[in-house]
Length: 301
Image (cartoon, rainbow, N blue to C red):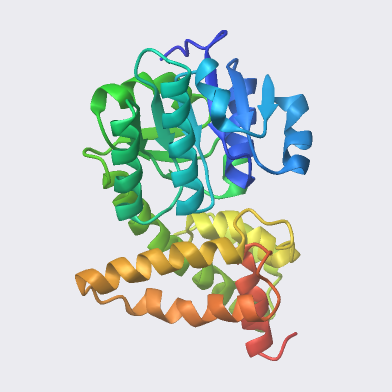
């Protein structure tokens, strides 16, 4: 499908690891991107890459009624929703803006945000992203969009500007449910990747070759392909998903599993490995740092 993009304006609120890639890829795809971030150094870095960059979301509706947000917390989302509703009222913005929320947050919080926006005349799409920060840079993301089908269709071209594929998964909230399932597998596959590479190293294999060969075989996974090279090169200081942020995702998954009384022995076994990464100084490092945890357990570090 051809992307109708020339001079189409899109707002992106939150220019962190994911938001910076979303916004820059949209700009490269021909959209005029209005970026918003509270952090001054982030704004300075992104200013040459986007049409405009600002600190406050208050005026974003004057530029575009199609907005994407990638935010670190429920608090940030609620503040954004409040700002957008207030701006629409004060500036007498006509039409029905649509906010696409891409973060991994508790579903009850997304429902509360949707209700706040709806009361202010703004629609919301729940559209979490499957993929790491490194994948986001190359548009290798999958989008699980849920909500009003018409609203989702309105973002088809925009989704195509920063992702590999996008899906409409039904009623609002199904996107988050799909993301929880995906992230459960990511949590397991990330640790299994570290375990397999360390096993290969102990067997005397060349780990760089191992990642290349196993990554192309039946035992592979996307996490093996993406994070395996990081583990071998020990480049987890170049975070594509910080361990401290991942703790939030792990907590949401664990709570959902507990609420539904779903047995999850593999996911549960991963939890202490990620906690060890936090306690061993890897909070700001990529989750590939679980390899360092296993190395230490094996007496390698």
